[in-house]
Length: 223
Image (cartoon, rainbow, N blue to C red; front, side, top):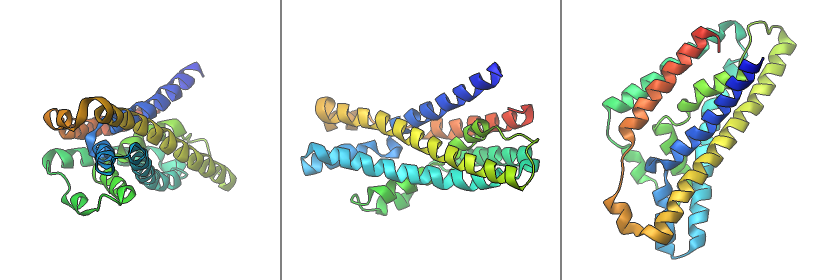
């Protein structure tokens, strides 16, 4: 029992740290928050931009998690579903390694539509997919669950878990990205940002492969 508690605790920490990781990545939008504050010359513009980016990211996370929440009630196919999800995450990582170009359609989204931009950016980068193996581990579906009522209870519990995962992850992302945006805006300035721009695309793609492989391993090992 203690091992299970420790495992679930570690998985929730993974939700938080994955949020920090997404927030640090410039591809998730924090430079847009800095840009909004500079263009409007209002500090409040940064908070507004971060809120819109957070909403878009949350919608992307829950949009990915909910379909798997519904699938997870098929407990007799638990291992197959988890393996399939792991392969999907790996496939996304491999695709991003091969296709290194930044999605061009994101440039066509107007800066005023940050919620849509954030949603599309998270989808295009496979940000939600990264949460799937962690989500499955938290749900810990047991093959002993059976029957209509058990499936109904399981589905309701996992939908709540999906929203909780999405909220905590998005909050962590916003804190990380917002902290960087504030430091850039108030102290380092835009010139520092242009000189020290960093690209995490390759590391991001590799992390998807690692997370997908972990999900497959966890499915086989019964975690």
